[in-house]
Amino acid sequence: MPQSSTPAIELRHVSKSFGAVQVCRDVELSIAQGEFVTLLGPSGCGKTTTLNMVAGLEDCSSGDILIGGRRVNTLSPVERDVAMVFQNYALYPHMSVADNIGFTLRMRGTPREEIKRRVGAVAAALEISHVLARLPAQLSGGQQQRVAIGRALVREPRIFLFDEPFSNLDAALRMKMRAEVKQLHQRLGVTSLFVTHDQEEAMSISDRIAVMNRGRVEQFGTPEEIYARPATRYVASFIGNPQVELMPGVIEARDGAPAVRLGAQFAVALPAGEAFQPGRKVEIAIRPEHVRLAAEGLPATVRLVQPVGAATHVVLDCDGGSLTATLPGFGRLQPGERVYANISPNDLLVFDAETGLRLPAHAPAQPNAKTQPER
Image (tube, rainbow, N blue to C red; front, side, top):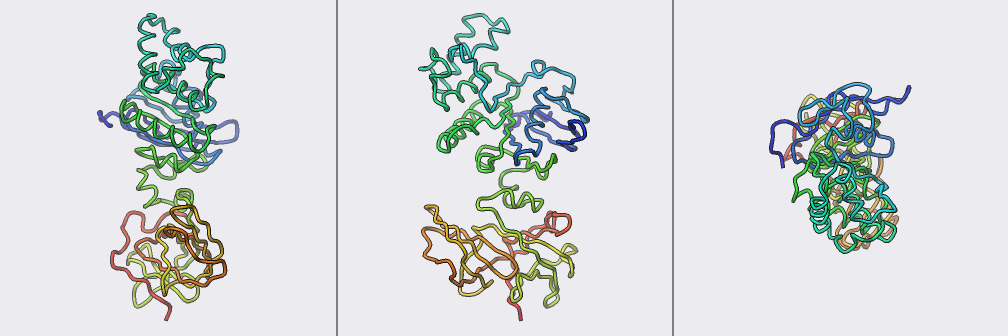
């Protein structure tokens, strides 16, 4: 974990354009020594381009990239002392596993005995010692991925860069490799920058996550911050499975206090403050695990019931929009059934309808606010 006040990686107002198309816009990140940080977002959001600029595979159009406090904009990938694990593994098909792992060391002129020792140590750490004599085509997908990681590890670089390394693996193997990479990082403590479009992957392995959208970083924080306190409606809707549904609303005054109306007969109290002035148009969201079914609350109709083993996702249609409730176990609800959704103001996420920013930006929810039915 962090061992120095100097950031391991720092991006200062970095932008990148390909002709008239700007793919990264004013990206700012500061990654501490030993941190595991993930760039998360959908295809085309600029995350891989950002990674490639850190690696030196792409030049930035403007801004500065620093590694260990040193500006590296004009340095080659080799001079930056980074190692990259690619999506397609990029293994040499005619070389054995041992030769693939040790290739970079041979190019550096490392003595043969030292190469053998380091390759053996890395192979043992990744549990691939028994396949060192095989060719890549003789390996499973997971073994090939370990070889690619081993080739990066053996260099003992300052920084690891991962470009969606698990996207070609099946679901079960992806989960296994996530755990292995996280354990590897815990042992070695090497600063790592990881790119993925898989939010579950990002949440499970990262110290911090940078959520990207259209070339910008929308929020940079811990998994808990990103999930529980999303800075924008984009982050709120992108993070979480099932995704939250956004419902439009207008702030109004009730008994001298602000509230947001949900449908024609239901409103939820909000904390006092400038952010919740009557007449302000907002969008609200609530995480599925915070929606409870009760004897009273927001009237709704069950549209879809999706058992997933330990829980059941229930999609509810209500006046003004829809909600998803995640209930424990196998639910016995049926489509068309009428229910009531109980919503706590403490769990409500409120966003400005125009800017998409969360309201209030930093203040916590009012601890004793109560749900108010329409009078």
